[in-house]
Image (cartoon, rainbow, N blue to C red; front, side, top):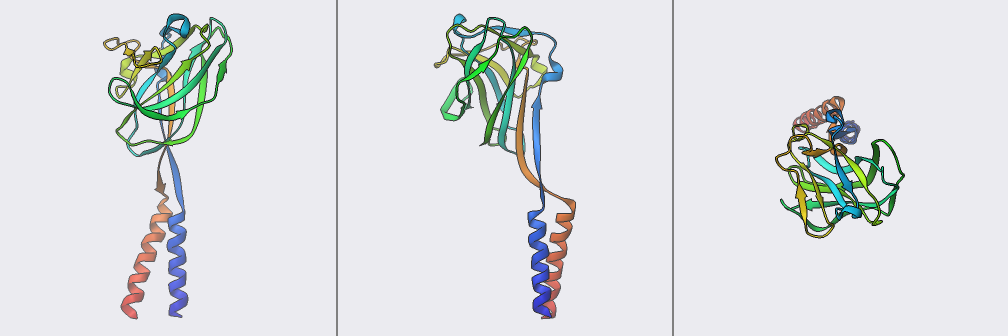
Length: 211
């Protein structure tokens, strides 16, 4: 009888450990977009790199996806997406994520350009840079911006694709990109899971005392 009880208790504990809810955290500045933008993204202006520095939120385990909003008013844009660690003034180390060649069709309005990273590991509190590198040599796009107050833990950045990075530090209207970043956070146990685990632990304690 005691053996059966022990097996039941262990089964409940394992079930409780397996029942968790994946949590997601989002950084979203779209509601702060007021029509401001930065031009010209693309090699035509010697600034093929536009992107965003961000800080991984508390509890974040992986960056699942990110998207920026672009108006490809000068024709189709051909680009690749990247994520690197950020060293304070430039990207550092090897690429944490790089996409294949992508195409953004010509448009007359700001269009989301979503990127699925497949889930790259991030460290809460650390900074990273996600960006698009326009590599056709002819593209010229408008990059939707959000005010600095929309996201104080990062900033819009641009560059020439090598080691030169710049920002609009001091500008309140274009301090960030219009963007959506989605993170997988550490799993959160369901209330029933915690109850099962507690019951299992109590039952084991009583079983040992009676043994």
